[in-house]
Each structure stands twice: as C-alpha cells, then as structure tokens.
Image 1 (cartoon, rainbow over the protein chains, first blue to last red):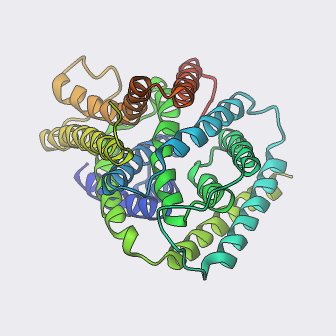
Image 2: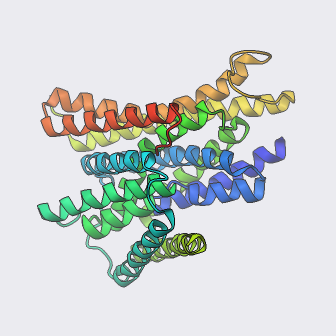
Length: 258
Length: 113
C-alpha cells in the first residue's frame, strides 16, 4: 500500500504541473498513469482523474487569482454556463449520436486548433493579462463553440480544457496565459457532477484519491508559480503538441470503430 | 459596498487554496494513517465499521475538495446580489442550476459530465 501511495503522489505532481501550465485538468496524465503504471482499473482511474481536475483547478486557479490579472472571472462563469449546458446535453444524448463520426470531427477540429496555435506561436503577446475587445458576434460564436465543446465532452468523455483553452485564446482573443488560467478556474465546477456519480456508484478508490489529490495540488501550485515566467511561444508549442496527440488518439479510435 | 475586481479575485483565490489544502491534507493524512495501521479503507459507507473516524476523514477531505469550487460560485453570486449586478446573478444562478441538474442525473445513473 505504501508504494502505491508514493507512486500515486509522484504521478500526481507531474499531472498537476502539466495541468497548471497548460490549463488542463491533469487527467490527460493522471488517468493513463494510474491505469498503466499503478495498475488501477480504467473506471477507477477515470474517477481519480476527476480528483486531479479538482485539485488542479483549486491549486492553480487559486494561485492565479491571488496573483491577480490572469483569470477573467466573469468570462469564466459565462463560458462555463454554455460548456456545462452542452455537457449536460452530451451526457444525456450518449448513444443517440454516432460516436465514430463525432470522434473524427473532433480530431479534425483539434488538428485545426493545433495548426493555428503553431502558426501564431511565434508572436509574443503585448500583454499576458488583457485581451483585445471582441465583437458581440465573436462572443456568440465562442458561446456556441463552448456549448458544442461541452456536448462533445459529455459524449466522448474528454476533458473540457483541451477545447476551452483554444476557444478562449483563438476566438475570444484572451492572451494564451490568461486563457489557460481562466480554463483552470472553470474546470473544477465541471468535474463535480461526474464525481458525484462515481462516488454514488462506489467507483472512487480513496486509497488512490487522497494521495493523488495531494500530489496534484503540489504540482499545480508549482506549475502555477512557474507558468508566468515561461515564454508564451514555448507554452503554445507544448499545448499544440498535446492537441495533436489527443487528435491522433481520437482519430484512431474513430477510424477503428468505422 | 462595491468590492474591486482585484479584491474579489484575491478573496476567491484564498477560498480555493484554503479549501483544497484543507481537504487534501485531511484525506491524504487519513489514507497515510490507515496505511500505517495496515487497514484497508474498504467500500462506502465509511462511517460504519472499524476505524470509522479515519475512513470518514478520508472521504470528508474529498468532499471538501469537491465543494470548494462550488463555494466560490456561491460566494461570487452572493457578492453579485449585494452589488445588484443582474446579468452576473442570472449567469451564476443558471450555472448553479445546470450543475445541480447534472449532479441529480449522475446520481440517477444517467451519464452526464
């Protein structure tokens, strides 16, 4: 049991660090780590992935909020409203829509996001905290995309951050660092309902959840401390690489199921 | 009285950090204590059986961690009510209702993220 705790904490630190730097929940690291390295069944690993999301959200966003300027609180709640509504619709309509087609569509969207991210990566932003004002139409487009992202998230079981960060940055013109910090702030709320379901079905292994939360929180606080000093192009290139990996995995699953 | 956005952000950040650290210390501390005692946490309900206090603490820590982001939403909403910001109040209430619906659907077994 002791070795499981130590390994889980170590994996959690890595997941939290990546999550805080990229505006993701850390599940992208934590779930495969728990499943493949610690040997926890996928269902339990997925439940623990939500604990990772909560810890990253609280640890990283807490620090970003206290530092000031990076998190756009009102925008976060507005965007989250549409993403959460989409997630609700997606969760209910699972099984009604063709999964493989959606997976391929999602992969194509991610690929576009990654290419756009690389294309704009070389430009250093004028500011990390304030974006340029956007038109009402662009704002509506962002809300629509967030709703769609929420639907896909509910249907495909992917984390919200991977979609929300590009929407905040590319559509709402939020500086990249501000987009990742705002995404970190939003994602905690998204994780709560799904976690309730796992707890109710007795699929949350507390032996793993506690140590994972501790590791992730530590990693997230460390990542949030370092993120402001990392150059934006570096962060964007890493994020684009993460997008490409997720897109490839989604496309592979979608094509295999066709 | 209107509170500046910087003060609001700092206040919400403090809530997030304090709540999460308290939850994580409680949960991880209880898990480590149980490991030292050589006891398995076992299934829910946690408040029944041997070492009920430690087992409950492990679960309570996770509950505290989960409640923390919701608490920030509620506190932000309360502040919006005090300041009379109608659109923000609607956003917070709408978000709260969606989360509540998603929780209920998850508890009923309908998958919802």
